[in-house]
Length: 135
Image 1 (cartoon, rainbow, N blue to C red):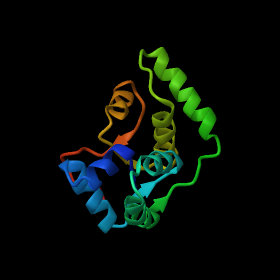
Image 2: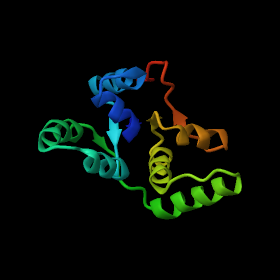
Image 3: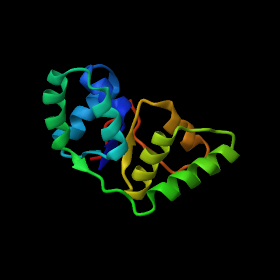
């Protein structure tokens, strides 16, 4: 399963870059997943009724990751631990990272916060943007 971050979805919808190609492969292989925080970011960013009628049905065909039981506590603890290591990460990215970790999902993101988390020891399985997904 590949949890596709909002940043990668944006690249896909704009049809640019390696992330767009990897999202396309994940969709074709039925490996694309999303979760609540990503849904919120995407739905809020849609700019027109036409975008909504085009994009939302596509997302509805992806795997929906259920909310981890201790999502809020785990995301908060992750943010606390990262801040002690000198890294402050936004709440939404902490929530997305917690979803990926809880579901043992690969994470496809263009957003550099996830790579920074990994460098600080968070065991995220980040999908390299120059490689094919392990599916």
